[in-house]
Length: 248
Ligand SMILES: Nc1ncnc2c1ncn2[C@@H]1O[C@H](COP(=O)(O)OP(=O)(O)OP(=O)(O)O)[C@@H](O)[C@H]1O
Ligand SMILES: [Mg+2]
Image (cartoon, rainbow, N blue to C red):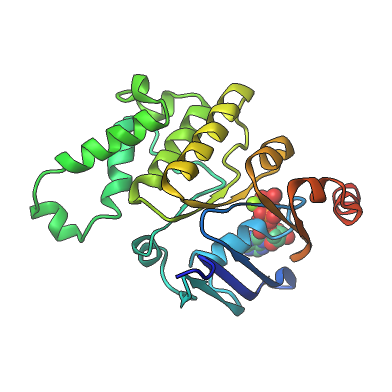
């Protein structure tokens, strides 16, 4: 199949009187790293939540590989190879790094019954160790996740999202609150993952340097609608985009 991996059509979502997302449509091609930017409150996270079944849109459709998934539960989307990270950290602070990553893997494997009575998690533990190593966290493997720096926890979060071997991952502010060293490491690892696995990313981020150097294409939201779309260079010099940020 050569169509888009993700197709979003006419998504609308209001909260009371607030029209958070107003008829957003776009496609994402396989292997792309697409940036989704926009001022605070422009509807980015709401759009992600509508795409991923955490919120049901008031109108519109979402297709993955040409198959309509609108109103599908997040857990079923996982099985279709779609992963995500949240704006807020979703690691369990009182569990070790390795246990967090194994647990994320378990969520993608079979039913509760097969987990309780099935074979041991040896394979999963190996996968988790490989993922931890990929994100260069092996030295922190047995530490409590809550004892890590914020940036390191963001890397654990990413490792968790990738445990399902997704073909599409939506990342909501992966670099938010992350220091410069960890930022460079996160970007380099995402690029490497994309190159090795052909995984498609859609990345919400406020850090322009990060977005512009990571993404091949950027979509800009303002007040719930797409106001611009193009390469990082086109977006950087787009007057409508500059005005949206300055006026926001
Ligand atoms: N659960 C909710 N209930 C009510 N209003 C909401 C809810 N979620 C979002 N909103 C409102 O919808 C609008 C879009 O919010 P959203 O979180 O999608 O923006 P965002 O682009 O992700 O912002 P940020 O960059 O600050 O994360 C805002 O006006 C916000 O206050
Ligand atoms: Mg947000």
